[in-house]
Length: 292
Image 1: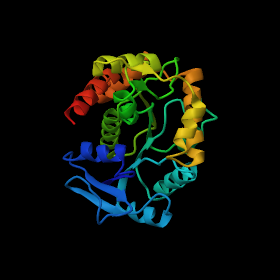
Image 2: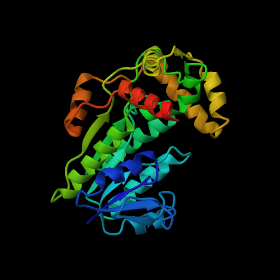
Image 3: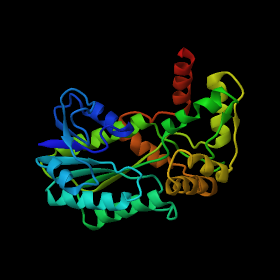
Image 4: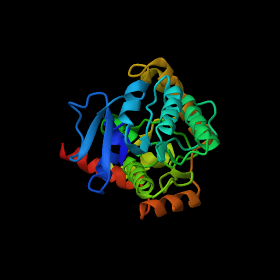
């Protein structure tokens, strides 16, 4: 039987494929362009996309375990719900669904609320799935490079409540571990949930201090201006996406997204180690930037 990985050429999906390599499972990577897709040796590219149900159905032929990552697009909820339905009809015995941390709480953030709805669908239908709920990705802050190295500013307006950011390498490791557990099981396993979080509750000021240490130069927090952030995002993203992200940061500022010790401990049990810290990420990034 086979594991199918969606989002296989993206940041998370590509790392999931790497973690699955050499683990004794047949792995298939869903991609729009199988003829040019860059996948690890031993992985089979499969033509298809979540927004095209017929191609997705075809790619699911012979698949026993599914990694479901749905991108933040305007019809994300529809794509995700239909993908779960098609996987169920195909007889997939296990699903690992990438949701979001605090999705059930941040009801006014579209991509959070959509993922929470998919979670409710999975639970209501009693599907054999592991729901992974990652916090804000640490590696998103690689986009801060020019501000950090130029004027010395950390620009993500995350506020002062605290966010337990997670390293994408830990997301991929957790996803691969659950995919293999479900794939190797002789029968479908019960529903399970993991919060994917980092070991620290980070604020804008504390992250600026981490970067000051890592770069050996003063770095200040750029503040909580969400209107300016939305306008800047609109130069790179559709308006709906920019507003969605503004609402997310607004909730970070008002409510935070800090993890409980039990959530961190449970993830550590799945990974077999403590989740990676933001400080380690910053030190690694600073060292790489210094080489350029």
